[in-house]
Image 1 (cartoon, rainbow, N blue to C red):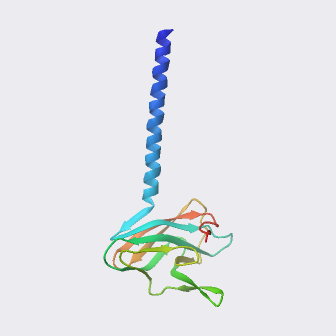
Image 2: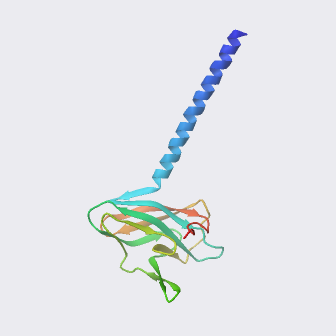
Image 3: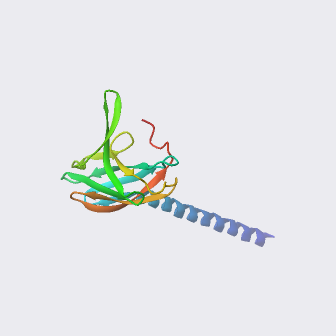
Length: 168
C-alpha cells in the first residue's frame, strides 16, 4: 500500500512538472507570436499591421499599423501592396465644413526621425481598392511596404472584426 502511494505521488508530481513545462512553452509561444507581429526594416519598427473585415459585397478595405522611426534620419512610406487588391493607395482623411473627406497621399507619408506615426481609422491609412475577395476575420493579408530609405519589407495584416478600432 505504501509503495503504491509513493508511485501515485511520484506520478502526480511528474504530471504537475509536465503541466508547468507545457504552460511555460505555450506562454513563450504566445509571447513569440505577439513579438512576431512587429517587423523591423532599417531604423523603422512596424507594429501590428491590421485590417478590418469589409462588409459583405464591399470592394474596399483599409490597412492600419504603427511605424516607429528609431533613427536620426527622416524616412517616408512611398507605396504599399496587398494580395487582395491591385490598387493600393496611401490615404489621409480631413474634416472641412463638417464633411469628412479622404484623399490620396501621392508624395507618401512622412516618417520623421525619432517619431511614431500611427495609421488608424479616420486618419492616415492604406487603402485597398477593388478588393478581389473579402478577407475573413482571423486570416492574414500579405503585402509589402516600400520606404524611401529603409527599402521594402513584407508584412501580414491581421484581419479583425468590422468594428475594430472604432473607440474614437
